Image (cartoon, rainbow, N blue to C red; front, side):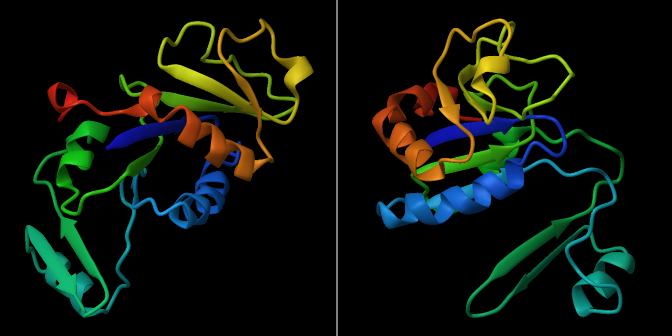
Length: 177
């Protein structure tokens, strides 16, 4: 299994990039899963629907499935911060790639997205887990990154780069969550 995180400020395009990357990896015969950090209070089920009603009634876990899909909803009695490794451990089907959105403070290999005009500080100068910087303004990167700089808008090139550098993202058995 290979794990790659996508880090960047809100609005950098992480979700869109991942959405465009998934079919390209799948076209290479790869199985892809996604782990995403969400803010508290998010919902995937709709008020009034069965899964929502069961969760609202107090069920700790609700599994809803059809012949094409399965979803697990779990309520915590007290707040607990999810970890990317913990969520990767929840995946039940083997994957070639796990794309992780968010979790920028965890020790996983990641790509940093930097948009033109971004004034907030970059992570790559101090983050040893950044394997490449994806940007639409390479000349604006200060200081120059110590890792490859890729075109944020060239997703096919990113898919090729990931395939060519898959070893940088291998999750070894001793790394397992």
